[in-house]
Length: 108
Image (cartoon, rainbow, N blue to C red; front, side, top):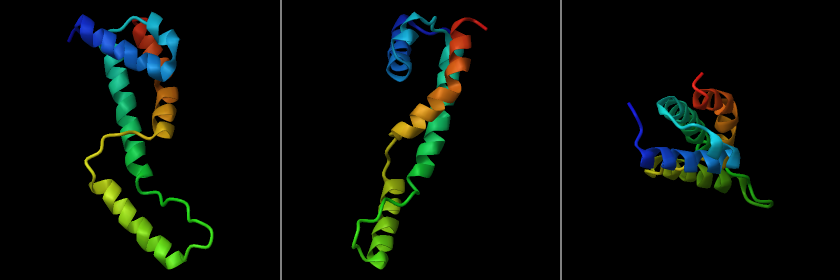
């Protein structure tokens, strides 16, 4: 599958937001797209798990009310059809995938 020029530019723009201006010099190809897809899949798994983490309890808040509110919040976050990624998840996934994406850009 060859990428069109518009798709290549869109992918390059995304990679530049994740990796900085160095990504502008990378050769964009189908292998780079595949590695980017894998990176985003890993980030999505992380973000899904982050939705399950209770938020910090405010000082002086009653623990029972805190637990009930967090359970509701977790349920609402999971029910919401939201495809956003947590910044910590995308940063970690991007760091783990950087070498593979850069190697794919070099044709290796």
